[in-house]
Image (cartoon, rainbow, N blue to C red; front, side, top):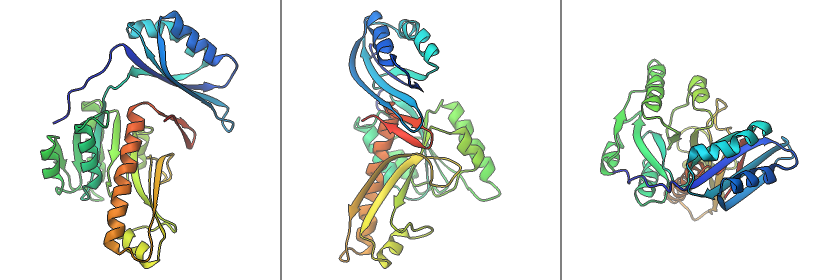
Amino acid sequence: MNPTQTVDAGHWVLSFRCPDRQGIVHAVTGAIATAQGNITEMQQFVSQASGLFFMRVQVQSGFDRSVFETALGPIVQELGAAWELDYVGRRRRTLILASKAGHCVNDLLYRQRNGGLPIAVAKIMSNHPDLEDLASFYGVPFSAHVVLPETKAAFEQVVLDTVAEFDIELVVLARYMQILSPRLCEALAGRAINIHHSFLPGFKGANPYRQAHSRGVKLIGATAHFVTADLDEGPIIEQNVQRVDHADEVADMVGIGHELESRTLAEAVRLFAEHRILLDGARTVVFR
């Protein structure tokens, strides 16, 4: 079962980006003080490459959203800022896409259940039935769909319909072994996260860990990134790596790789759910 959603109605998180200029921090913190807010966490960054200013601030107060918006509205309008305002700790409505591998799905659902991830998984959709029992164990609705070249467009429409039905905020590709169409990538831009194994050299196709073993790879890694139409080239959110050597067999590498993939994806999801990721073109600004 999904854990009960608990939020502190008096604790807000504000994240925004705008063109850099003097006085931004002073203006924002002044507005918060005027609204009788108490800043509990604040981080900021200026991108020299894009000239954009990024900020994430948590505020405790007894005011409601309308008071906060009234205080900040004129300032963010003057700054030309793209901004989000949310409750701290609110669980983000999430859809998981999966195939046969269950390690990432299991990790996400376990972390959700124990409170380690502020997400509420509304549904798991898969192109195989293999993970239905796992979804049932956690009490999450599951549906399997045949995804072939001639049915792919219809399935992706079902995904979009599900996103609309459940007001999904995040789509997680938890080892979903299908390439999304440019149409779906565009529709989910900035709210779809994928996990990818990372080797040097980069092995594609079936059995990447067997390929890595046969080439004597010394490092195994994983990369979580936003989904774009450019396959596996979206803005990077989180990466991890672990050293291996000649004594590690294929099964050892698979185990190490699965652990890295699960941990890396879960961290990327947490960062997204807590409004700690801001896009800076093809890069991300991540406030930890």
